[in-house]
Length: 116
Image (cartoon, rainbow, N blue to C red; front, side, top):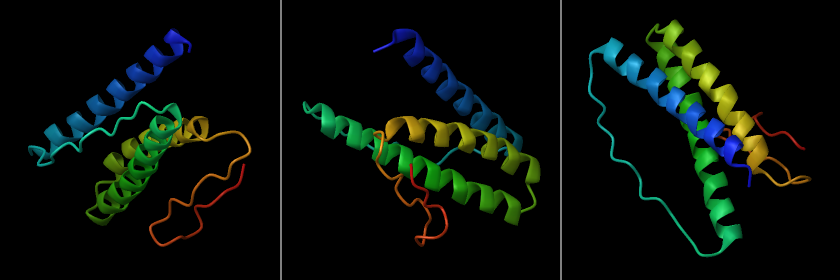
């Protein structure tokens, strides 16, 4: 494990949180979510699978938020979320094992499937 790479990734996640929190402040709202419990395992393969599942869900959720922003005319907000989505998709590519197909992340099994 490369500690520096892990810290860079954590810094990027903090940047994502700051971008989202600024948008929430802009809207003058307070988040109304409950964090999901973190799944853990002693088995390294299970932990990697859990991490990949979380990345998949995150990507689906960001895609949904982009559509919601565009529907209400918040195009700048949609662009900021789109930038985060690009970075999350990069994380997703790193999380998949070489030679494995990237799972379909479309809500209805749409055109989001790509092979590696």
